[in-house]
Length: 495
Ligand code: ADP
Ligand code: GLC
Image (cartoon, rainbow, N blue to C red):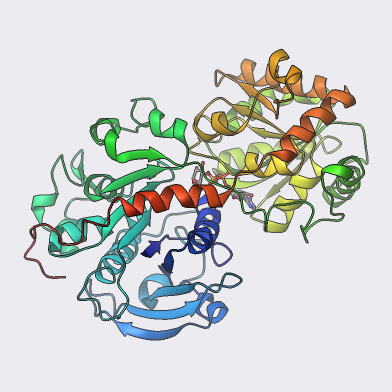
């Protein structure tokens, strides 16, 4: 089984969130399960050096921004083959993969990610200049959605296409006059295609033209078929329900396990969790300038700071949290208003609140290890990896009952405590009062160390294996093997 796996970010090369983690860990798991993998990502600055990539093909210049050259290198650690889409005018610039240093979307994201989709499609077909072609193209999120549209437009023999939704809120919406500019036929710009309220949507292209759709938890797969979570695409998703499945993400315990984590002051496992967490908590409090307070509950947040993540709920309950005597340590970036409000809080209450605005892989690990309670009051959460990592670090999560949070955290109720199943604290309604009550419940439990340790032990035992998820993806790929000879061309049949 040959699989071309394309994502706009792949850990450890580029990461802005959970998609990077998934694209870093799932391909090696698929490889272990027997699939032959090729990864495709843009050649952002520095990446070709890290992967020792060399040019192997020139695909020409479809959009007038310079040639799209394919570089071939190796992924660090896993050694899988990586193809980099090199087009300096579009990808060689300082800043993030989607935004500039000031947090503004790159104005040419339309062309940047059209080229990624176009390249994935070009490399998937028999007329690719490279000798290796996939049985299945597996594409992720709106940035790769056009791959399926190009394959539909060109017609002819093509691989099966699997499209994974990591977040329905990001839809890749652009003005419709882009359609001819991208050499796509107007016949695909319809309600059944990539047209969305007059504009074109790269996400909708992926949803409409891929053979199979997946998302990253079973609960989110159901939620997105409803108006509350479908962001206007619930109709299409329910129409495609028989092709849509939820496959829960795993965790890469090679990266996220306190027993082997090189970012920590002190490594620990389930059998020395009390000592290990105490040492990491003391180190974290010192690093963040919080008072050394071993028995004060330390709540941590590692998050994009936006509406999805319920950061307004956190701000709303801060007075109550401080009243409880807890500390809060937050690491994140996002909306400027939330960043500013968090920073103001830290300034007003330095004895209880520490805030770091920015992105730091090392600090994310140290917060997981040094914290007692992870707060994740998401309004929606396709899967969520942060709470899955927290479980392994014995940092008990407080989460809302949605998406992957509902699928991965077991609320400490009377019954689950009795049966040794509780792993955290879950609240139903995304309101400040429900969240506050849940945080107070967690803090109350923290003050009963014996019970707390029982829950910690359950949490640390949880294993969200990528191997299991990889098996499910392989089954899906196999179901597409007969696709091979493809349909008719919609746009003249020429790349
Ligand atoms: P999402 O992908 O929606 O942001 P996830 O919980 O799936 O949420 O994944 C978030 C990933 O990004 C985790 O690996 C988390 O540690 C990391 N992360 C989020 N914010 C930061 C930050 N400011 N610094 C470092 N890592 C971060
Ligand atoms: C998205 C989602 C998050 C998920 C991640 C990886 O960023 O917001 O819930 O865990 O993708 O699938």
